Amino acid sequence: MHGLDHKIKNKLNNNMKKYGLIGYPLTHSFSKRFFSEKFEKERINSIYDNFEIDTINKFPEIIKNNPELVGLNVTIPYKEQVIPFLNELNDSAQKIGAVNTVKIIREDSKIKLKGYNTDTYGFETSLSPLLKAYHKKALILGTGGASKALKYVLNKLGIDFVSASIEELKENEIRYEDIDQKMMSERLLIINATPLGTYPKTDTFPNIPYEYISDKHFLFDLVYNPEVSLFLEKGRAQGATIKNGYEMLLLQAKKSYEIWEK
View 1: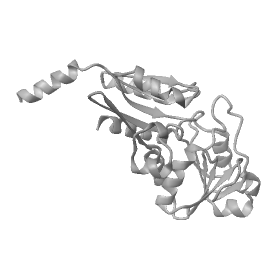
View 2 (view 1 turned 90 degrees about the vertical axis):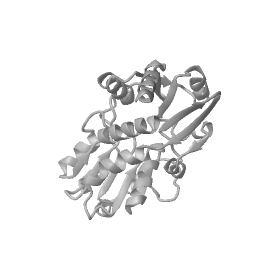
View 3 (view 1 turned 60 degrees about the vertical axis):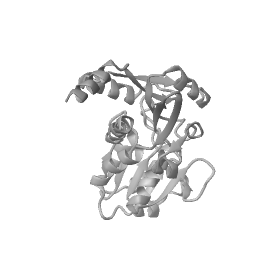
View 4 (view 1 turned 135 degrees about the vertical axis):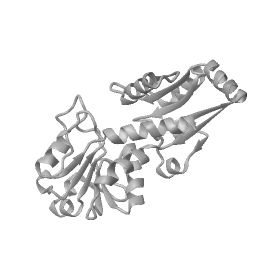
């Protein structure tokens, strides 16, 4: 018992832990609010900071200048750019090629940075309960870093997908103008992985033929602010099942914390 008391004392004597988020811009950070509230409510001796950096080259400075930092979340545009700065990636982060969680392991004078992707867990856990047997094919809107985790999960679930892109086309990608009635009737799961519709630009939405959406469609939006984006509103008007990205965000944040603490 004495050993346990000693451990608890040691823990209390330790300095405050720090966590944070890197990205640019960081105007409406869900993570800072979520973790600050969590630490206060659960009386955890930790703080969470936003590190808004205009280039990923400033990433090493953050690690160096914050010796109490033990974990970071990574958001756009750095989910892919952060990888060369890391020592190791876990399996899913490696396969996806995008990282949203960094664990900072400090041993003696050495620092080891390990990258994870918890978006996969958040997306799969949030999406799965609403999937029906006929959701066999998906249409992903957007081809940025955010879409990589989605593709990993869809592959895992055996759901065929194509992505709509405004960039130069790669494999399994199509132009928005190629989205016709046939495609809409076949691909009953439609996922918005673009920032279109996010506050303050709430009047924007992906350009797809919404008139072909039916009550068999399931529209999933990574956007969570506003609660119902125009993309989701247009789908709901056609009788579709809709879900925003809030629960996914919540789940990936909780998973990040598990990783930092284990």
